[in-house]
Length: 307
Image 1 (tube, rainbow, N blue to C red):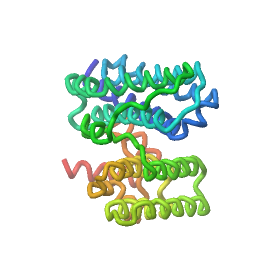
Image 2 (image 1 turned 90 degrees about the horizontal axis):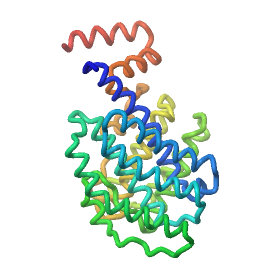
Image 3 (image 1 turned 135 degrees about the vertical axis):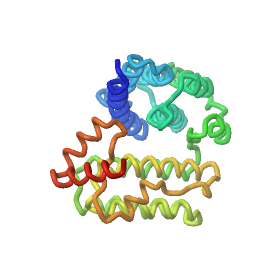
């Protein structure tokens, strides 16, 4: 297989995996409802299974193994419906973060090396053991002892892994994110955009003394206010950044919170924005759907001049 074809196939895998990740994140954020709905829990299982299969075909072993561990956990939920609790949701969220971290590294400019993947998996293994044991105890009708994991130790295990939420602040953030996700699934209109902005106001009040948090939520609210930005564009960026910022609040690292460049662009840009894949073929397909012929011609000329 030549390099161009390989890059294109990897690009397709990453785009598909992102969609499955979104399914997994939404399901975990609403886990108490998902476990009581057969189709929802099957959807979570299939999403993890699909990522596992695609990674196996492309020899991304660390991603394959991580998705497999999530798939096994969802299988228990599918076969033995249980009463979820906050600890289980937190353990699932961290497992999700590990998988997301691997995929983001794969998509990055340096890619994901085999050694790097193995190191992340080695650091994450104790967590997956805890998840598996905890969920199995719940399925067996036992009263499990919450794993002895501190926020500091979780964050130290990997630079991009978020801490396990445990306090009231993080619970408030998660509940509001669940409401935002439900609205982002709807067709955009002035009324539900106003609802999203009202939820941003609630988020602001959670940590009024944290300037970084205030600035990030302000950017999110401003981005939502722009009717030119679709929910498909806004949802993954806002949900992810608010969730990570909430994790920082939970471990007392509010000073590290700041909106990303992408969120700031959405907040203050007067022009409509789109997400472009790093895969040239997928990027071309996106551009052809959004741009007219005149815009595409101008873009081609600009690219030629820049090279």
